Image (cartoon, rainbow, N blue to C red; front, side, top):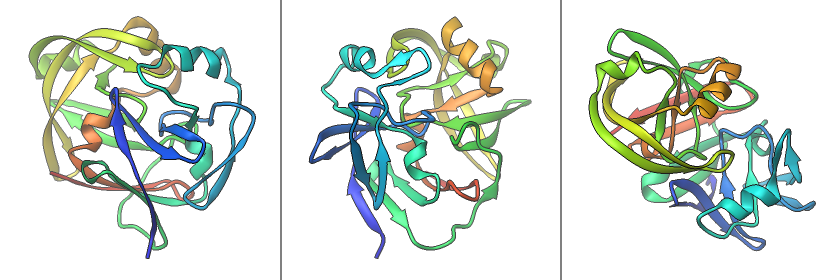
Length: 223
């Protein structure tokens, strides 16, 4: 039987409760952050780091809309296969090979190829983002404007962004997803990573997603 934990979306961010307290599960973060302690997650032990570049955990912690003791990034999962069933509050470590597409991850974060209208997009799967995001205003013309919406991202704090509903095509599957238009700061981060879009927890809540971090394979079933 695969090892699993219960997860919950708090403030748009995927979290799990451990002995240490609430930990953010962030597939968009290259490193795990928090106090200088090791944490065991789904059979893997990861060392929390006080900062990543200009992002200090103490500052991120202060800005969170809920209490959390740390953040688990993809460095915790570099050699494992995970199954995300966020709609049913489950994250599992899988012990079998998955059926999916080989792709190129960005700094350890999973990436999938999608399409909106005529635009083909490289999209990072990010459980640390509440909303999904589009880097380019031009892609948004294929969607229906929904107005402004508030969001929160661990690295960027509170956001207020224009949103659009778009039909997102992944392989032969499709669904309607709400996207925020990236702020200037977020767009800069996406440019650096050469990413066209972010698929946040709203996307995970509509999907069953399996990720082989070691072999860089992603499989998904969309509702």
